[in-house]
Image (cartoon, rainbow, N blue to C red):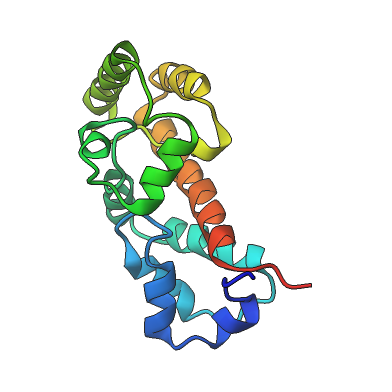
Length: 174
């Protein structure tokens, strides 16, 4: 029995319940769930998911950077200590980032440090669409980006993450 709500159910939720259900779609940023909830009703689950990306892209550059910085480092200290959101922990586990060798943890630490030094933000990637190896290779390649390119890439990756999180929260109808 699927206990997820349908889109019809989601469209009918009172705004506080909508925000509670979708507040984790964007890392530590429930304000976006409130904005999206005010745009209901949605005709398709994909429209609901896209609304999160639209809300982020419509925000100020400062708020976008705050959202990017709200994300944890991949296989970082917060992940190791269990201090990331349930969504992030599950996603990182799906790519095996919770089962790294000491050498792999050291390599992720090196990549995270280089990334912060170059861009002053964490490396963001939709881990559910990648493997441990492609995540590491992607980080190395993206270190060659300009700060503007990397910020745009991070926002695209956040959109992918949000889409998958929304799809996890709503039962497809029909």
